[in-house]
Image (cartoon, rainbow, N blue to C red; front, top):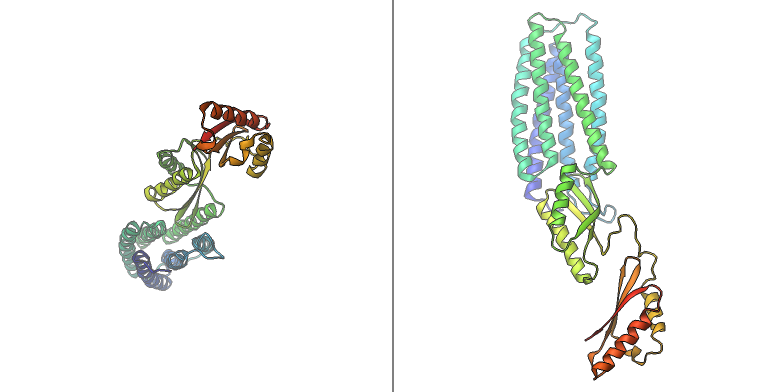
Length: 377
């Protein structure tokens, strides 16, 4: 695995965020316990959840960027997805305990102490997390990382929850009872939502949910803009980590060469990777006819059997042994045959015409053949 500049930038900002979250977690949980502020304790656990998220981002950046191997032919991006589901479940469980504790506090007489220390911790948290939001978002844009962008919003979420604590504790100090517990309840519900969002988004990826409709439409536009593509169908998309995977069938002119069809498919693949962000892999299937509803040619004999039938039909033609090439076109449930002969096979035009008619008539006796053509080279 090559440790690229982008990967180093991701790891660096993630480590910085982890250190900030660790310090804030200790500060808020410690001062929350000292000042009997359940809201600050809840906010401390929110920062602790962000510390776990930082660990997830670092893990995903390191392992998810490894090259595909024999055991993981599509790469390691879903290490991140699995870790996200686990993290979301942990957040929901922790936040549930916070909510339960906040509700139970409505029924006891504990009072807030060291209020100004609690407020100071909340202010420090707001400033630190807002700075981390902007710095992380800047790195996310530079590295085009959805994972870092999501982590930046986790920092912003922590800043908002600290602001909720600031308001709640301030109102409690002003004489309005239970506002610290109300603030703790709000923060707990915010963390529950974050947990559910993480689990939901990761689960969509695990069950191969398609990309957003607007992204799918952009993909269609890029494919149809490629010269040689007449139509497309069976377009399927899914996510794997930060990358999107695309499978598509494209309809091309039915009688072009295999090499031209391959060139068109490669142009489609490279156009999507170049023009669409985060496209990791594109699989293009070439179709000579529209098989979206049915495949009319699928039951026709394959080449070996078809050529054997044609050779049997040509049995009475003396020039049969001089056939250079036979091209078969399977279209609309029938076979079109192109027979290539050397131009020196006959000197007279009339002889060539007679020979052409012989091959065409004989070929048309094969039931699957709808059209026959003789070419001289």
